[in-house]
Amino acid sequence: MSAGLALQAALLARLGGEPALAALVGGRIFDRVPPGAAFPHVALGPAAIYDCSTGTERGWEHLFTINVWQRALGRRSTYEIMAAIEAALAPARLDLGRYRLVTLDLQQLQARAEDGRDGYGGTMRYRAVTEDGA
Image (cartoon, rainbow, N blue to C red; front, side, top):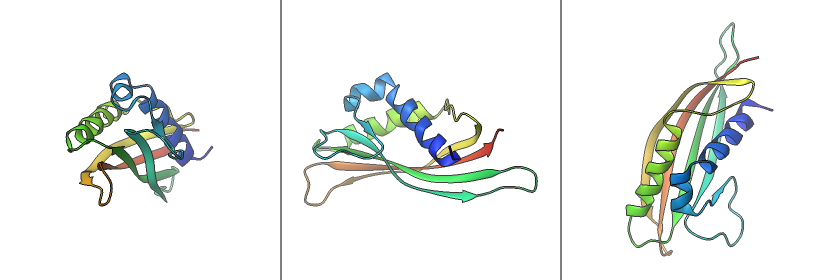
């Protein structure tokens, strides 16, 4: 398994195991949103991985987003869901198997009304660095 897949699996496991987040989104946390999924829900968004190896260690920089989708009339529930995600990931309690998580930092939050839709979307942009622990 690559470092990117290990991070993705760890994120889904950590977010899926967070009771406060599950209560807010009804346990609807996806890698890819299935057709007809109920609202609100959380989904992993775009991700990019860059090699940041040194002369002695293999390493990767991961830039990824977590998206929040809901049908409430205001931003409040979007911010509440994002706060629960941030709390779940802040301690960086992620098991990456053979890889080691060096850093996991939230870089940006955005909540926006979706034009032509009856709700709000939220985007959380994260940066992580992993190393090969083998």
